[in-house]
Amino acid sequence: MKLILRLFLALLAALVFAGLVAGPVSPQGLAAGVPVTGQKMAIPTYFYPGPGWTRAEKGAPTVGLVIINPNSGPGASKDPAYAAEVTRARARGLVVLGYVYTSNGLRAGAVVKSEVDKYYLWYGLDGIFFDEADPSDCSKQAYYKNLYNYVKAKGGVARVVINPGTNLPECYISTTDIMLNFEGGYNAYVTWRPSAWVAKYPAKRFWQLVYATPQGNIAQAVAMSKNRNAGWVYVTPDVLANPWDTLPLLSYWNSELSLVRQ
Image (tube, rainbow, N blue to C red):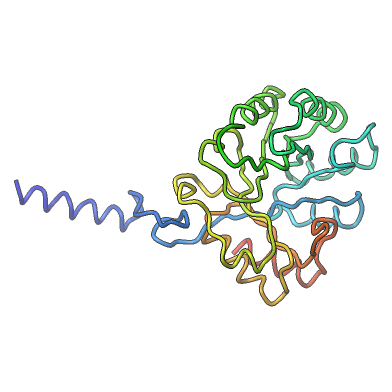
């Protein structure tokens, strides 16, 4: 019996070494400390259609996701410039989402859904980015699950992102395709860590946004994101009040593209 057990353990060890069985998972959400591969950039493109959008589109396939935000939401009417930009971005293979804020689950669901409807009617998007999703406990899980189901019923790609900008309880993973679990400055990112439960899910479920990052720290920021189970990342030198209203200078941008796709 002991011989059989020894043979079994030896076989299991060989399978783990060969990558056929998953090894131990670290608190950062990685198998035995192996960084995320196949990472992509997801960008809050909160600026009007023009050269910045063109550069983001040319960054595909490393750039995989962008967001339109005409007026902290869809605005009062369809904007032809955004409509044309959405068409161009989707033609390049980018997933295009519409920005809707939720006031931490306090905004009326009917109002939020009306904005979802406008985005789909005017722009034919691939899903919705629900901002301000930072409840401190699971009390708003049903609220966000209802919005998730509403978007999914639209058909098509129907990608749903929620943005708490920080760690959330695990109950919210069922309310989203991608959770944006960090949004903050580089200095805060150095010491931040994802919740331990993040280790149970694939990297494509998590996105991290890091602003106020000097050019000399791009490599460190991207490396940290890959070691924190982020399948989606965007790093920028831009700062508050709105770090998402520009793209970096070309030298910074090209460095980041290269680092992300490594």
